[in-house]
Every structure is written in C-alpha cells, then in structure tokens.
Length: 152
Image (cartoon, rainbow, N blue to C red):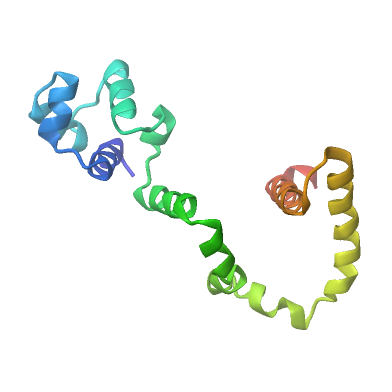
C-alpha cells in the first residue's frame, strides 16, 4: 500500500475531513489531497504532525493497514467476559484447520507433561500466575517459530 493510501485511511479512521486536517496543519486542502494521491509527500515535520493527529507512530503511519488496525482495536476492546465465551480454537480453526483436527493424530498427553514442566518453571522462577505463564510460553514459542530458519 502507498503512503498516500495510508494517509487517506488513517484520516478516515480518525473521522477527519481533508479540510480539518489542512486547518490543523496550516496547509491547504489541496496539499492534503496531493499527499493522499501520492502526487507529493509531506516533509518529516508534517509527517510527525500527521502521526500525532491520527494517534499513530511514524512507523505505524508509514505502514498503516486499516484492517490490521481495526482487528487490533476489536481485540483491545473485547472484555475478558466476552473473550471467555469465544471458542478461539474454532475461530482460528477456520483459518488453520489443523487446530480442529490435530487431536485425532497427536498424543496430546505426551506433550502436556513437558509443557506443564515449562509452565511450572515460569511460575516458580518468575512468579507468574497460570494465565501469565501460559501467555509467556506462547510468546516464547512464537519467537522460536520466527527464528526457526536462523537456528537450523
């Protein structure tokens, strides 16, 4: 996606018109339009003002993805009570079908024993409760997955 599209989507997500943004930045509406159409680029100071106005970091503004931002906000706004009602395996299983079928093939108990030791280690060594230990272990596994090629 282009910077212009990112600027357009960030502005729309913020609920601002081109005129409102132009007024806040002290530029013309046409300037905002040219930025959003990729005809010109805002300078670094204007970019910083835009990121502040849209409540994004400069990196987020440059890489702004409206769908990712909306998903992140939905997750952040989901209460714990509602979150507990969600069948996360079923939801993720729609995207990754293996999550709904692996139990038929994998000896889960074989892995539970090893994972329980890792969870207990995190709890005793760092004082995490059950949920925090599970989240930390999940994140460690994610890091291991991301590094799998460099470790091979």
